[in-house]
Length: 125
Image (cartoon, rainbow, N blue to C red; front, side, top):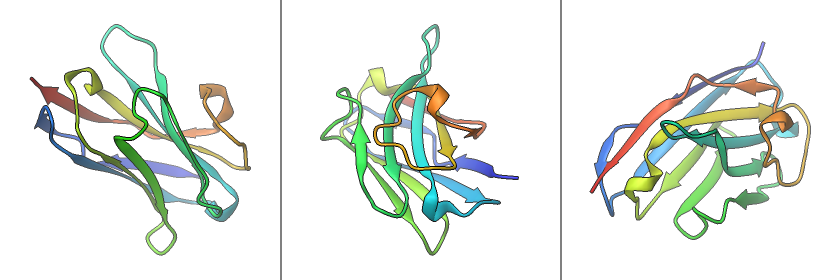
């Protein structure tokens, strides 16, 4: 059974940086697509970034392009989201997601089979 565990969320000031990590287990992840989504209070969950684990091809939402970077670490079986120049509007619960096949883009929740429990990111102004 695939399990995803997010970590790294905390309170940070605007302009600061955070690195979120998603520890993945129970699967052969070189064939997977991994994604990060977020959900702010009162809003729907939205796509942030995705990566084809073995190919390193990544995709980003326009709102985070140029500020966030998604990467995979094969040795540690983790997917990371480096977030720079954080803004108050980045405040949300951030979720890691996995799809057991390759998909280019992966911008929809329905593209993914597995989800983590989420980690809270709060950006103060």
